[in-house]
Length: 157
Ligand SMILES: Nc1ncnc2c1ncn2[C@@H]1O[C@H](COP(=O)(O)OP(=O)(O)OP(=O)(O)O)[C@@H](O)[C@H]1O
Ligand SMILES: [Mg+2]
Image (cartoon, rainbow, N blue to C red; front, top):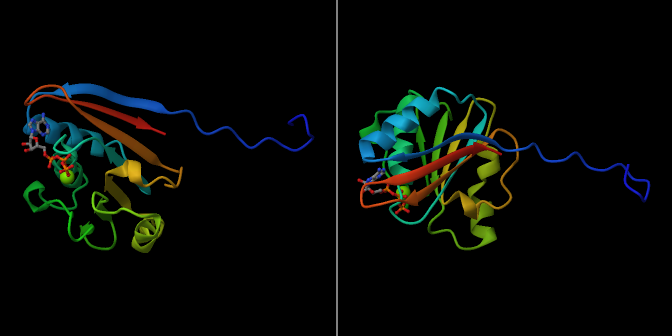
């Protein structure tokens, strides 16, 4: 109970660090994502954060392949389409919010509705999805650590 007598809202689930590592090549990033895919179960929202060219799409190739939804070479950036779907039956969605500028544009995409019970939703520029649902959420941050090196930090939050 808070001092005014109302029940306090439950504290947000504490974040759980899954990995914090540096990869030395795109291939290593893909392999890392494939391994991580085995630890995920639907519904799961995967928010990818990091500057241009930091490896979000490369990582998505590994995730989608690891989830068995498509081959890694079938995964391309949905920068213009905004949303790609892999594996049929609404199983794996790949979203790129780079070009989305307003809350209204974001709302039009209906990202919350894609996250059905059996779905994985991977969102590049995930930091723009400010009101992302807090359930089953994995945040992955990418940082340049050299020409071919990328620091990748993943945590459930
Ligand atoms: N260790 C690494 N991990 C991932 N990509 C790497 C690595 N080293 C070099 N690269 C290169 O960096 C680039 C990453 O591009 P990618 O499209 O994955 O980034 P992105 O974060 O999706 O960019 P954008 O913001 O434009 O969508 C690719 O050209 C890739 O070959
Ligand atoms: Mg990309």
